[in-house]
Length: 310
Ligand SMILES: NC(=O)c1ccc[n+]([C@@H]2O[C@H](COP(=O)([O-])OP(=O)(O)OC[C@H]3O[C@@H](n4cnc5c(N)ncnc54)[C@H](O)[C@@H]3O)[C@@H](O)[C@H]2O)c1
Image (cartoon, rainbow, N blue to C red):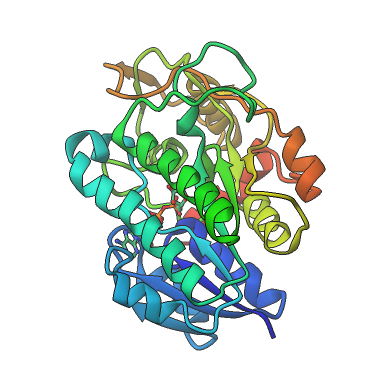
């Protein structure tokens, strides 16, 4: 039976990935320090996984976690632009040193592949849309720098040491278990909370900024493909739905789905935020047979149902 390590497996995406891997018959180990993840996220699978509570910034811990592992899904990070703007050193430590530790441990423990959770933030605010992997990166925040540095390290480990790696550049993933309670929460998690509490949607800036929102199940499926696909080198691959939605449209769609007319209230734009985000996903389709089935509306309906059930 193949064995996976998910760093950050108690997080939003990591916990869905754990479920997806278990369903496919993988053995799953999770390494998490619960910095932003929650025990609640893995409560229902706790008897099926091997949970290690520890920090990716500690190389000894990561070496221990990596023993007898076939594939690492490296999801652990402090995934917030504003938090990184506030505390760049902390962001650097977890997102860059943590990734380097994972790669070192993978190399030394003969791990077959590292699938790295990269980020669309690497593109920065380039006006050309859709964003395609051949564009030069232009990270605008410590978070974006960290996620991009992880890609470079992954590629370098492939070149220098022959470790198989792939970087999946996620674009605004959403779904159940995304934490709406922190000031760093993703916009969909926050907006769903507004919708359920019948509060106005508070929007950073004019709301005409756009994102390529991707339902988490699409992301899990492509990770499973990335673990076993055949490819050369250390590819960087966009993972998105391939469609652009403005924040204003998002609020309107949520009003439609919940049959409400909640107000849209505008504030000042966030530092380090990019204006538009929209992905070309042809490389993912070609290399990983990526086929995102769940669109924004379906994803929102499923996510709303989940939050209601809580
Ligand atoms: N959600 C998105 O839209 C999105 C977009 C682009 C990239 N990503 C990347 O995907 C990955 C998962 O993001 P998420 O949205 O599930 O966030 P999340 O915060 O829910 O998950 C991150 C997990 O990493 C853990 N973690 C943080 N620091 C750690 C440390 N030092 N040691 C061990 N574990 C640690 C957290 O406790 C958490 O469980 C991250 O690498 C993030 O950068 C996410």
